[in-house]
Image: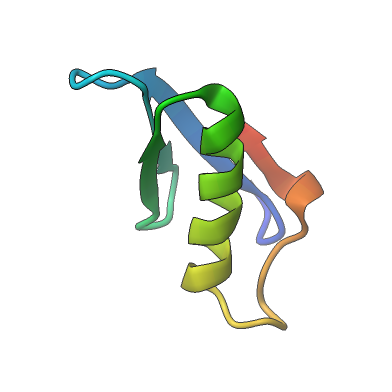
Length: 63
């Protein structure tokens, strides 16, 4: 994994919906649907990094 890429492991949540955990970063989020989860992941990444350090949305992979 290079510094411009973040991979998220997506799993069903025990409570319903989905959870996403970043591999190699302390980023976690959850949502009711996959579409909502994509938005939540983008928001979580934006909060985790400063503007100049943030990877592009193309570099965020949901697996």
